[in-house]
Amino acid sequence: MGPVRVRVPAKVNLQLAVGPVRPDGFHELVTVFCSVGLHDDVTVTTSDETRVRTTGPEAHLVPAGADNLAARAAEALARRAGVSSGVDITIDKDIPVAGGMAGGSADAAAVLLACNEIWGLHWPAEELVPVAAEVGSDVAFGLLGGVAVGRGRGELLEPVGTTAEFAWAFAFADEGLSTPEVFRTCDRLREGVDVPQPEVAEDLLAALHDGDAAALAASLANDLQPAALALRPGLADVLAEGTRAGALAGIVSGSGPTCAFLCPAEAVAAVVGAALAGLPGVRRTRTARGPAGSPQLAPVNP
Ligand code: ATP
Image (cartoon, rainbow, N blue to C red):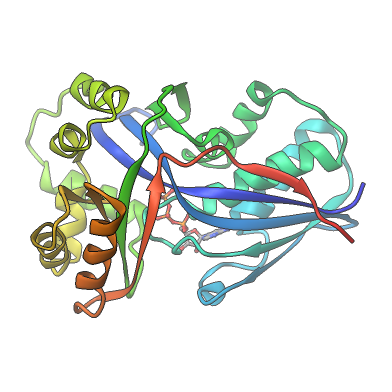
């Protein structure tokens, strides 16, 4: 079979509740993932060995070899499915690297979907989930897109049906943040605190169901935000400027440092994006709608 291309969206966490550290060292999480309309395009074709190439302005920040999450996904699926060949992967990257938007996980999910097709496996999505979870905590959500509640490390997913769509503005930072470092900082900030078991915010799910942007704005919550702000204090000014410019709320996306702004309309998101551009530490801004749909797989025309 010829090459296939998968267009995968980035995510923001509308809620990210970080619970106690588990015996395996991971934190118990409850999160509400929401895909947004920023995408990587991942092209996959059969090959003897697995190779990865990344294009786009941030390509130099993405590992080329076996450390790439996309390559790890291909290898994990090949192992489980008993496939001995590899794949040639080209990632056209638009999702910021180390930005808290799960770009690497999205690429890994894209490769699982593509390999399932080009290797003729035809596994149903639920069989790909354990392979995704082996590659990374956010990869299973990458298979789905839309909105989902994630539990465990984020890999135990329950899709949330919603027809609502919201307008977002994003401020991408000059430099990424390391997810493990943000979790370590979160632990340090909470030393001596009795951390409760995380629970999903029912208000937030109701706001999503109703398509109520103001109520959703009031429910956005990220337990990693204090840690991201401790590591990158300038983000507080970015968040303040976004709401001053008209956003209903601003939040650090996942482990950061991308800041996501929920806006009352697309025109306001454009104003917010323009107001944030040029702030110290902001590399570029974008607007997008979200929730976005699922990953889209299509054959590549020769
Ligand atoms: P998350 O939101 O899931 O915590 P993130 O968005 O903060 O992740 P990613 O862009 O997924 O971060 O990448 C984190 C690190 O993983 C990067 O610094 C990079 O070295 C490595 N990496 C491996 N594969 C990829 C990939 N395909 N795209 C981007 N980064 C990758």
